[in-house]
Length: 514
Image (cartoon, rainbow, N blue to C red; front, side):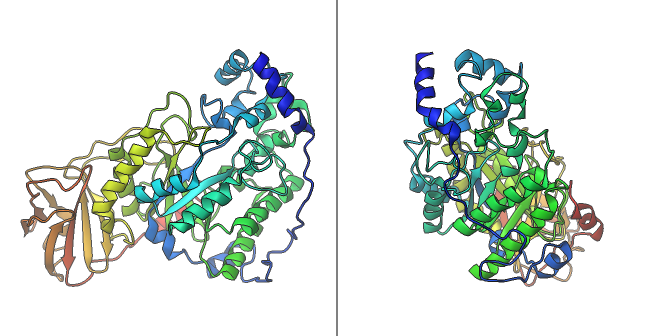
């Protein structure tokens, strides 16, 4: 209890914190600061003017980072800030046992303990580069309302307290120095209701002077006033950091927020024209998939999609942020998921959860480095590729849909995924079999008007024995494996052997993906 009292003394000044300065934004305008108004806040206009960036469709693999004050308790999940105020929950009981009553020690009191004393943006960026990632998305503000950047609108930020550093700016510089694309995510929409449980029993959440705890609304109950506040905070991130991608969680599809989100998209896209950059917005539901990139949380699409899409998932199975006792996925599972996603016109955004002190666990480092090792051999079949007319073939039924990817799929050498690049066709075989494999999709009839010029296995100098038959292209594996997890046959033709053809029906289903 003595330590708790010390922390309370340190943090008592925070309760009355209010912004000393606010930037004024004309949120009723969709023009950029330079007056650009190409994009308007309606989907028809956006569909006419928006183009998916080549950098995104070429990149295929990015890193997500969940890091904030919620890593201090390191218990349960990144939703500890909410669940500690859910009476009788596991986190509620843990909090009282370890930290004390909610009136004596609230979530705000973790912030002085979140010092990030070992954080090194360059070390992180170097690890991400070695992992093979092409774009990096740190969380600028999670549901907890603590900004990891120098905000003029939110006094609860990492420059004024906690780390006393502009984490987002430091990461942006380190990421762009290594020629990776910088983006960010903002979850401020969820902050409006995230702490409402603390209104049901005595807690510091009932002190309305503590702006960290948001509006304390009923869940998903938004107002026009909050929507305007949310838009101002989002404009601040755009103007201050010029991210090339902004990722949002699910509640931006709320009916009250949606008109303001459309204003945001128009403003962001107009700003990108000023920057002479191409940018991406990620949402999970409610918005057309031809004006932004549809994102699937902890799962995959079961079909090849007409427009680029993305899976966001985590190395950790239990939480997005660092928690004690985390269980991590294997590199093999993640590589298999990456291959399956890319074959269906998608990207993989893979999350890691650093500790409160700014270090990344050795196990998660090892996972990233193993993925990078595989990509150094097989990246040619991933980066810059496009879909074929079908994503693959095989017996295994991979998982699909949100929150379905914790369990790995058992693949055999009959499970194959396809990508293409110019006249080269890549058949990525998801397991090894000394007896070889057959690509039934490449039978004599299917490729009758194309000629195979050469077949090789990426990473191997050995000759590949092959034979084109009525049943398919028979391939023999060489004696030695060039890598682990999956193996890429590069089949060079004298011309392209088909294009990505997603059905109109599939596109219509995904237009308002839910």
